[in-house]
Image (cartoon, rainbow, N blue to C red; front, side):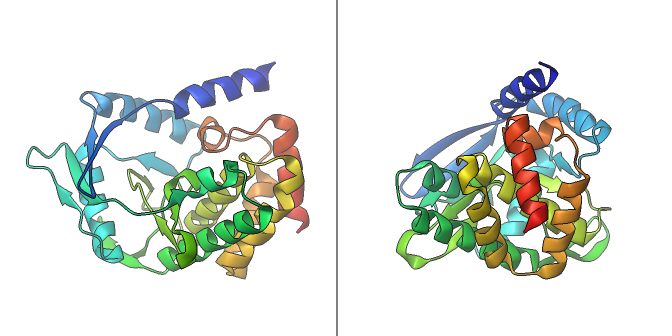
Length: 251
C-alpha cells in the first residue's frame, strides 16, 4: 500500500504544469506560469532531501539555460520581451514516448531507442562555461523519453525541454549516467516487462560509452526504491521496477 501511495503521489507531481504552450507558423512559445517559482522552490527542496541530482530552474535561470543550450544545438531560441518565456522552433517528429506507446513494430521502437541513446551521448560531449565552471560537460537533468523527438526516416533524434538541470557540483559521469538511467527507466515504463531487455540493449547500444553505462548500472543496482522524482519520470510499479532493475544489472 505504501508503494502504491508513493506511485500515486509521483504521478500527481508529474501532472503539475509549470508552462503554457502555443504554436504558430512553425514557432512555439513556451511561457512559465505565474507563481510557479514558489512551487519549484518547494519541489527542489523535496528532491534534495531524497538525494536527487537535478533541480528545476527558476524562470530567469531557465531562460538563460535554454538559450545557452540552443547555441550548442544551433537552434534559434529567443527570450520573450517580458522575460517570462521563450520562442523556439518546432522540431518535426514525435516523442520517443509516443513512438513506444504506438502500434508500430518492435523493430521501429528499437531503432527509436537507439537513436535517442546516440543523440544523448552526442549531447553529453558538448561543453559550456556556467556558474564559474569552465568547460562543464552538459547533461539534461530530465532525460526521459518524453523529452526526445524521433525524426522519422532521418534516423535522428533531438533532445528538447531544458527547464531542469543537474546540480553543477555533481560529477559528469554521475550526471551522464543519471540521464541514461532516466531514458531507460522512462522508456521501460511505456512497454510491457517483456520489452525491458529491448529497452536496455537498444538504448545502451546507441549510447555506446562503457564507462557511463557501467556507472548507470551501478546506480541502478544501488537503488532499492526509486525517489518520487524518479517515479514521476518513470511510473513503474514495484514489481516492474524490480524486473527492470534485474534486467539492467544482468545485461
